[in-house]
Amino acid sequence: MDAMFAMLDRIMPEIVTWRRMLHQQPEVSHQEHKTAAFIANTLRSFGFIEVTEGVGRYKDGPGAVIGLLRGGAPGPTVALRADIDALPLPDEKTVEYRSQVEGTMHACGHDGHTANLLGVAKVFIEHRHALRGNVKFIFQHAEETYPGGAKMLVDAGVLDDVDVIYGIHLWSLFPTGEVHCAAGEIMATAEEFEIDIVGRGGHAAQPHNSVDALLVGAQTVLNLQTIVSRNIDPIESCVVTIGVIEAGENFNIIADRCKIKGTVRTFIEPVRALAERRVREIAEQTAALYGATAHVDYKGGFSSVVNDEYESLRCLRVSADLFGKPRTRKLKPIMAGEDFAFYLEQKPGCFMFVGAGNEAKQCHYDHHNRKFDFDEDALPTAGRLLIGMVLDYMREHA
Image: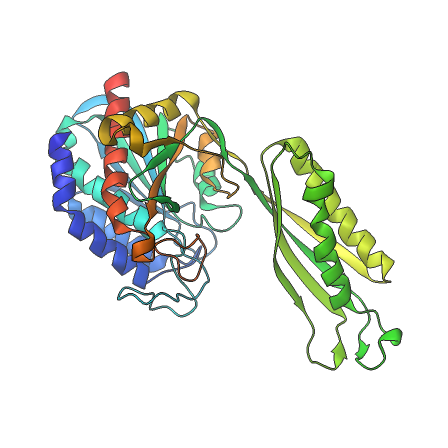
């Protein structure tokens, strides 16, 4: 393990270079063509023979890139996953590696996940004879859009020969170098909905002759906030957030249509079902109150991320051994969603968080923020953690 960590340290400048290149050339879900090609070519340059492209692809998207490394002795197959897609968001940082693609940026750390996993792949192939089993590297597309690339890969059979799977999320809201993990439900079910409100347009000076869809939409947004405050048991966790409201064409025209887009985050099925029912009821009844109509398209979403108990304990133990107990923390559940949930429904494993927040470096903005960045000093921790998890599992199961 020491030799592997020493190599990881030596190639860290290369890992940072990969990360910054990916950050400058982001691609959104199902459009990660250049990213996927770079990953596949880089793996082959390391000496990987078994590299598969286009796995789980959707329409004309590139799909995922899978690299399989066979170790020097028989043993289990451990899967490691990194997500590769970016977000349709303009980059407002003032750094030299700022996104060069207008309206698109890596605002969630996926560029770091990809670069980190490439670094781990390079370390492992140089030490493959010391591996007692195989490592499957999953560079997954489309994590940011439902149903998510993970489900597509599960449906394609990517996990059929896998014994356990691990993933890491660099997290700007935790201090750099900390490791957070816990058993059970650690990330929420994430569902989305759209509400289309139809009123009757007219002149701004004659509101009595119209049905103002914008007004109905505004009232609907306010009413939806009562779901958490007045319908959900205060002991349970639920978030209802409206991200988009679109209506109107000009200052003197009463809008005839209004579109609302939002998300619901929960952990348990009864709360999820109640929240869905209330979204529908509130939208339809609020619209009816003003003489409008509302159509609710309540879409599915990612399931809760449920970490395997034994593998989560492994993470906490490995982290404490590598970094010390003060840097190893029990994770509090996070209301964000992740399609890593689909993997954990099929195989044991765990999703781990590595702190990458540093206010002095302007790396403290929340994920999906236009100024998001992460502290690259977190990359050695992320790489060591994945290496440590793989070797520990192989020692136990070889």
